[in-house]
Length: 126
Image (cartoon, rainbow, N blue to C red):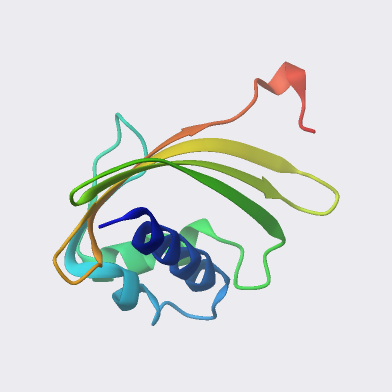
């Protein structure tokens, strides 16, 4: 993988999150994907389980959000991405994540982990 391929994958990830249903997930994740939602969470294993998790986690394809990413590093089949997600208009929730994605030979992600961080509640959003 190179930076251009990782950037294309990130765009496909966002398109999939914004798409109705979960049919686009097979284009970005392998059938046997491991998806870790936090450093101490158990991984969601396999594409069908990831599809169920995505449907449970999002408000739907019309969910209002902005995603800004920065590719921090790419080394062979591993990419590290800094992501900032802001939900709602007006802003209701925000996250800063680090993503670690390991890719298969076909460019689909075979292992994904995110390290999500939200601002402290007493700090508010915005």
